[in-house]
Length: 319
Image 1 (cartoon, helix red, strand yellow):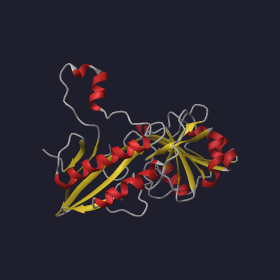
Image 2 (cartoon, helix red, strand yellow):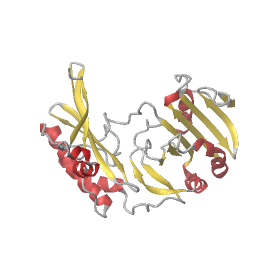
Image 3 (cartoon, rainbow, N blue to C red):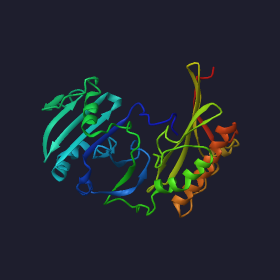
Image 4 (cartoon, rainbow, N blue to C red):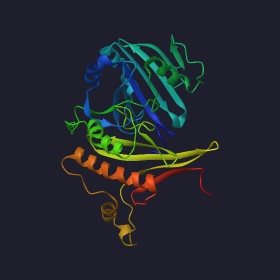
Protein backbone atom coordinates (compact mmCIF):
# COMPACT_ATOMS: atom_id res chain seq x y z
CA UNK A 1 0.00 0.00 0.00
CA UNK A 2 1.23 3.48 -0.77
CA UNK A 3 1.82 5.99 2.01
CA UNK A 4 0.84 9.24 0.33
CA UNK A 5 -1.04 10.67 -2.59
CA UNK A 6 0.72 10.39 -5.89
CA UNK A 7 3.80 8.46 -6.87
CA UNK A 8 6.85 8.30 -4.63
CA UNK A 9 10.06 6.51 -5.58
CA UNK A 10 11.44 4.34 -2.80
CA UNK A 11 15.04 4.48 -1.69
CA UNK A 12 17.14 1.78 -3.29
CA UNK A 13 15.35 1.93 -6.64
CA UNK A 14 16.82 -0.20 -9.42
CA UNK A 15 15.24 0.55 -12.79
CA UNK A 16 16.31 0.73 -16.42
CA UNK A 17 14.28 1.89 -19.40
CA UNK A 18 14.37 2.19 -23.16
CA UNK A 19 12.44 4.84 -25.07
CA UNK A 20 11.64 4.91 -28.80
CA UNK A 21 9.19 6.90 -30.90
CA UNK A 22 5.64 5.69 -30.25
CA UNK A 23 5.06 4.71 -33.88
CA UNK A 24 7.84 2.12 -33.51
CA UNK A 25 5.90 0.19 -30.85
CA UNK A 26 5.45 -3.01 -32.84
CA UNK A 27 9.05 -2.95 -34.03
CA UNK A 28 10.21 -2.65 -30.40
CA UNK A 29 8.06 -5.57 -29.24
CA UNK A 30 9.15 -7.80 -32.12
CA UNK A 31 12.81 -6.88 -31.63
CA UNK A 32 12.76 -7.91 -27.97
CA UNK A 33 10.36 -10.84 -28.38
CA UNK A 34 7.70 -9.34 -26.12
CA UNK A 35 3.92 -9.29 -26.07
CA UNK A 36 1.20 -7.60 -24.04
CA UNK A 37 0.31 -9.59 -20.91
CA UNK A 38 -2.02 -7.32 -18.93
CA UNK A 39 -2.20 -3.91 -17.26
CA UNK A 40 -0.47 -2.47 -14.20
CA UNK A 41 -0.74 0.77 -12.26
CA UNK A 42 2.99 1.53 -12.23
CA UNK A 43 6.29 0.41 -13.68
CA UNK A 44 8.27 -0.24 -10.49
CA UNK A 45 8.50 -3.81 -9.20
CA UNK A 46 6.28 -5.45 -11.83
CA UNK A 47 8.75 -6.92 -14.31
CA UNK A 48 8.60 -5.37 -17.78
CA UNK A 49 6.05 -2.59 -18.36
CA UNK A 50 5.36 -0.22 -21.24
CA UNK A 51 3.57 3.13 -21.56
CA UNK A 52 3.10 5.81 -24.20
CA UNK A 53 4.25 9.27 -23.15
CA UNK A 54 2.49 12.56 -23.98
CA UNK A 55 5.72 13.57 -25.74
CA UNK A 56 5.15 10.97 -28.48
CA UNK A 57 7.74 8.55 -27.13
CA UNK A 58 7.14 5.03 -25.89
CA UNK A 59 8.96 3.84 -22.77
CA UNK A 60 9.68 0.24 -21.74
CA UNK A 61 10.90 -0.18 -18.15
CA UNK A 62 12.19 -3.02 -16.01
CA UNK A 63 14.58 -3.87 -13.21
CA UNK A 64 18.15 -2.77 -13.92
CA UNK A 65 19.40 -6.08 -12.52
CA UNK A 66 16.89 -8.51 -14.03
CA UNK A 67 16.35 -7.16 -17.52
CA UNK A 68 19.49 -5.26 -18.59
CA UNK A 69 17.55 -3.25 -21.12
CA UNK A 70 20.49 -0.97 -21.87
CA UNK A 71 22.35 -3.97 -23.30
CA UNK A 72 19.61 -4.16 -25.96
CA UNK A 73 19.98 -0.55 -27.12
CA UNK A 74 22.12 -1.25 -30.24
CA UNK A 75 19.67 -3.91 -31.47
CA UNK A 76 16.62 -1.79 -30.59
CA UNK A 77 18.04 1.19 -32.48
CA UNK A 78 18.58 -0.98 -35.56
CA UNK A 79 14.89 -1.93 -35.47
CA UNK A 80 13.50 1.46 -34.42
CA UNK A 81 15.98 3.96 -35.89
CA UNK A 82 16.76 5.66 -32.57
CA UNK A 83 16.71 4.41 -29.00
CA UNK A 84 17.27 6.27 -25.76
CA UNK A 85 18.08 4.30 -22.63
CA UNK A 86 18.69 5.20 -19.01
CA UNK A 87 19.02 3.50 -15.65
CA UNK A 88 19.23 4.23 -11.95
CA UNK A 89 20.79 1.97 -9.33
CA UNK A 90 20.18 3.99 -6.21
CA UNK A 91 21.87 1.54 -3.83
CA UNK A 92 25.25 2.45 -5.34
CA UNK A 93 24.31 6.01 -6.39
CA UNK A 94 24.74 5.25 -10.09
CA UNK A 95 22.80 6.68 -13.04
CA UNK A 96 23.39 6.52 -16.78
CA UNK A 97 21.82 7.55 -20.10
CA UNK A 98 22.70 6.55 -23.67
CA UNK A 99 21.43 7.13 -27.19
CA UNK A 100 21.97 4.77 -30.13
CA UNK A 101 20.98 5.44 -33.73
CA UNK A 102 20.94 2.67 -36.36
CA UNK A 103 23.05 0.45 -34.12
CA UNK A 104 25.71 3.06 -33.37
CA UNK A 105 26.35 4.81 -30.07
CA UNK A 106 25.73 8.56 -30.37
CA UNK A 107 26.51 9.57 -26.80
CA UNK A 108 26.65 8.26 -23.25
CA UNK A 109 26.60 10.00 -19.87
CA UNK A 110 27.05 8.35 -16.46
CA UNK A 111 27.30 9.68 -12.93
CA UNK A 112 30.67 7.93 -12.56
CA UNK A 113 33.05 5.68 -14.48
CA UNK A 114 31.66 2.17 -14.86
CA UNK A 115 33.84 -0.89 -15.52
CA UNK A 116 36.39 1.17 -17.40
CA UNK A 117 33.78 3.06 -19.44
CA UNK A 118 34.28 6.84 -19.12
CA UNK A 119 31.63 9.05 -17.58
CA UNK A 120 30.81 10.65 -20.95
CA UNK A 121 31.25 9.67 -24.59
CA UNK A 122 30.23 11.35 -27.84
CA UNK A 123 28.46 14.68 -28.18
CA UNK A 124 26.33 14.83 -25.05
CA UNK A 125 23.40 17.29 -25.35
CA UNK A 126 23.07 20.20 -22.96
CA UNK A 127 22.27 19.03 -19.44
CA UNK A 128 19.51 20.80 -17.48
CA UNK A 129 21.32 23.36 -15.33
CA UNK A 130 19.64 22.40 -12.04
CA UNK A 131 20.86 18.77 -12.17
CA UNK A 132 23.81 17.64 -10.07
CA UNK A 133 26.24 14.92 -11.20
CA UNK A 134 24.03 12.10 -9.93
CA UNK A 135 20.82 13.51 -11.40
CA UNK A 136 22.33 14.68 -14.70
CA UNK A 137 21.80 11.49 -16.81
CA UNK A 138 18.19 11.15 -15.59
CA UNK A 139 17.42 14.83 -16.13
CA UNK A 140 18.92 14.70 -19.63
CA UNK A 141 16.91 11.60 -20.56
CA UNK A 142 13.76 13.27 -19.23
CA UNK A 143 14.42 16.43 -21.24
CA UNK A 144 14.63 14.35 -24.42
CA UNK A 145 11.68 11.96 -24.08
CA UNK A 146 9.61 13.20 -21.12
CA UNK A 147 10.03 10.19 -18.82
CA UNK A 148 11.61 9.96 -15.39
CA UNK A 149 11.35 6.81 -13.30
CA UNK A 150 8.21 6.78 -11.19
CA UNK A 151 7.63 10.52 -11.42
CA UNK A 152 5.32 10.71 -14.45
CA UNK A 153 1.68 10.55 -13.31
CA UNK A 154 -1.17 9.87 -15.68
CA UNK A 155 0.49 7.09 -17.66
CA UNK A 156 -1.30 3.84 -18.46
CA UNK A 157 1.15 0.98 -18.08
CA UNK A 158 0.91 -2.38 -19.82
CA UNK A 159 2.57 -5.50 -18.46
CA UNK A 160 4.79 -7.31 -20.98
CA UNK A 161 5.79 -10.97 -21.19
CA UNK A 162 8.39 -12.86 -23.17
CA UNK A 163 6.75 -14.56 -26.16
CA UNK A 164 8.64 -17.80 -25.62
CA UNK A 165 7.72 -18.12 -21.93
CA UNK A 166 4.52 -16.12 -21.47
CA UNK A 167 1.78 -18.46 -20.30
CA UNK A 168 -0.91 -15.91 -19.59
CA UNK A 169 -3.25 -14.75 -22.34
CA UNK A 170 -4.03 -11.06 -21.87
CA UNK A 171 -7.63 -10.63 -20.71
CA UNK A 172 -10.05 -9.49 -23.39
CA UNK A 173 -11.52 -6.95 -20.98
CA UNK A 174 -9.43 -3.97 -19.92
CA UNK A 175 -9.15 -3.80 -16.14
CA UNK A 176 -8.69 -0.02 -16.28
CA UNK A 177 -11.83 0.46 -18.37
CA UNK A 178 -13.78 -1.87 -16.08
CA UNK A 179 -12.61 0.19 -13.10
CA UNK A 180 -13.75 3.40 -14.74
CA UNK A 181 -17.09 1.92 -15.75
CA UNK A 182 -17.87 0.15 -12.47
CA UNK A 183 -16.09 2.09 -9.73
CA UNK A 184 -16.39 5.73 -10.79
CA UNK A 185 -20.21 5.86 -10.50
CA UNK A 186 -19.94 4.48 -6.95
CA UNK A 187 -17.26 7.03 -6.06
CA UNK A 188 -19.38 9.84 -7.51
CA UNK A 189 -22.36 8.74 -5.42
CA UNK A 190 -20.10 8.92 -2.36
CA UNK A 191 -19.15 12.53 -3.10
CA UNK A 192 -15.83 12.10 -4.88
CA UNK A 193 -14.94 14.36 -7.82
CA UNK A 194 -12.70 13.58 -10.77
CA UNK A 195 -12.04 14.51 -14.44
CA UNK A 196 -13.78 12.62 -17.28
CA UNK A 197 -11.10 9.90 -17.58
CA UNK A 198 -9.12 9.98 -14.33
CA UNK A 199 -5.84 8.16 -13.92
CA UNK A 200 -6.93 5.53 -11.43
CA UNK A 201 -3.45 5.10 -9.96
CA UNK A 202 -2.68 8.75 -9.28
CA UNK A 203 -3.30 10.50 -5.98
CA UNK A 204 -4.87 13.97 -5.98
CA UNK A 205 -7.04 13.07 -9.00
CA UNK A 206 -10.08 11.51 -7.32
CA UNK A 207 -10.72 13.90 -4.43
CA UNK A 208 -13.32 15.41 -2.12
CA UNK A 209 -13.68 17.88 0.74
CA UNK A 210 -15.34 16.32 3.76
CA UNK A 211 -15.65 17.72 7.31
CA UNK A 212 -12.96 20.28 6.54
CA UNK A 213 -10.53 17.63 5.33
CA UNK A 214 -9.05 17.16 1.87
CA UNK A 215 -9.31 13.52 0.91
CA UNK A 216 -8.10 11.49 -2.05
CA UNK A 217 -8.47 7.87 -3.11
CA UNK A 218 -6.53 5.89 -5.69
CA UNK A 219 -5.74 2.33 -6.71
CA UNK A 220 -2.83 0.01 -7.28
CA UNK A 221 -3.90 -2.62 -9.78
CA UNK A 222 -2.72 -5.38 -12.06
CA UNK A 223 -4.19 -7.77 -14.60
CA UNK A 224 -2.71 -10.70 -16.46
CA UNK A 225 -0.34 -12.90 -14.47
CA UNK A 226 -2.07 -11.67 -11.32
CA UNK A 227 -5.23 -9.61 -11.12
CA UNK A 228 -6.01 -7.34 -8.19
CA UNK A 229 -7.14 -3.85 -7.19
CA UNK A 230 -5.80 -2.28 -3.99
CA UNK A 231 -7.74 0.67 -2.55
CA UNK A 232 -5.59 3.43 -1.02
CA UNK A 233 -6.53 6.74 0.55
CA UNK A 234 -5.31 9.95 2.16
CA UNK A 235 -7.08 12.42 4.43
CA UNK A 236 -5.60 15.63 5.80
CA UNK A 237 -6.40 19.13 6.99
CA UNK A 238 -4.33 22.28 7.40
CA UNK A 239 -4.83 24.63 10.34
CA UNK A 240 -2.67 27.74 10.74
CA UNK A 241 -0.17 26.29 8.30
CA UNK A 242 0.13 23.00 10.23
CA UNK A 243 -0.94 19.85 8.39
CA UNK A 244 -2.34 16.78 10.07
CA UNK A 245 -3.65 13.64 8.47
CA UNK A 246 -3.18 10.01 7.63
CA UNK A 247 -2.80 7.67 4.69
CA UNK A 248 -3.53 4.00 4.34
CA UNK A 249 -5.50 1.40 2.46
CA UNK A 250 -7.85 -1.54 2.64
CA UNK A 251 -6.52 -5.09 2.69
CA UNK A 252 -7.29 -8.65 3.82
CA UNK A 253 -8.97 -8.82 7.23
CA UNK A 254 -6.74 -8.99 10.27
CA UNK A 255 -7.40 -11.97 12.49
CA UNK A 256 -6.14 -12.95 15.91
CA UNK A 257 -4.63 -16.41 15.78
CA UNK A 258 -4.17 -18.74 18.70
CA UNK A 259 -0.65 -19.83 19.59
CA UNK A 260 -0.84 -23.15 17.75
CA UNK A 261 -2.37 -21.59 14.62
CA UNK A 262 0.63 -19.29 14.13
CA UNK A 263 2.84 -22.27 13.38
CA UNK A 264 0.72 -23.52 10.47
CA UNK A 265 1.59 -21.49 7.38
CA UNK A 266 -1.26 -23.04 5.43
CA UNK A 267 -3.74 -22.12 8.14
CA UNK A 268 -2.21 -18.66 8.51
CA UNK A 269 -2.66 -18.06 4.78
CA UNK A 270 -6.22 -19.35 4.84
CA UNK A 271 -7.15 -17.17 7.81
CA UNK A 272 -5.51 -13.91 6.71
CA UNK A 273 -6.19 -13.82 2.95
CA UNK A 274 -9.24 -13.30 0.84
CA UNK A 275 -10.66 -16.45 -0.75
CA UNK A 276 -9.41 -17.28 -4.27
CA UNK A 277 -11.22 -15.28 -6.98
CA UNK A 278 -13.61 -16.83 -9.46
CA UNK A 279 -12.74 -17.65 -13.07
CA UNK A 280 -13.78 -14.09 -13.93
CA UNK A 281 -10.73 -12.50 -12.37
CA UNK A 282 -11.55 -8.95 -13.44
CA UNK A 283 -15.14 -9.25 -12.27
CA UNK A 284 -13.97 -10.62 -8.92
CA UNK A 285 -11.42 -7.82 -8.52
CA UNK A 286 -14.06 -5.18 -9.30
CA UNK A 287 -16.51 -6.71 -6.81
CA UNK A 288 -13.87 -6.76 -4.09
CA UNK A 289 -12.81 -3.18 -4.89
CA UNK A 290 -16.42 -1.97 -4.58
CA UNK A 291 -16.63 -3.53 -1.13
CA UNK A 292 -13.30 -2.05 -0.08
CA UNK A 293 -14.28 1.42 -1.34
CA UNK A 294 -17.28 1.29 1.00
CA UNK A 295 -15.01 0.18 3.87
CA UNK A 296 -12.64 3.07 3.16
CA UNK A 297 -15.50 5.53 2.81
CA UNK A 298 -17.03 4.53 6.15
CA UNK A 299 -13.66 5.03 7.82
CA UNK A 300 -12.95 8.38 6.14
CA UNK A 301 -16.48 9.67 6.63
CA UNK A 302 -17.10 8.71 10.24
CA UNK A 303 -14.11 6.83 11.60
CA UNK A 304 -15.88 3.47 11.39
CA UNK A 305 -13.26 0.92 12.40
CA UNK A 306 -12.75 -2.24 10.39
CA UNK A 307 -10.10 -4.95 10.55
CA UNK A 308 -9.46 -4.39 6.84
CA UNK A 309 -8.22 -0.80 7.36
CA UNK A 310 -4.43 -0.44 7.41
CA UNK A 311 -2.92 2.94 8.33
CA UNK A 312 0.53 3.40 6.80
CA UNK A 313 1.34 6.93 8.00
CA UNK A 314 0.11 9.68 10.32
CA UNK A 315 1.34 13.25 10.58
CA UNK A 316 2.37 14.82 12.77
CA UNK A 317 3.64 11.61 14.34
CA UNK A 318 2.01 10.66 17.59
CA UNK A 319 4.23 10.58 20.68
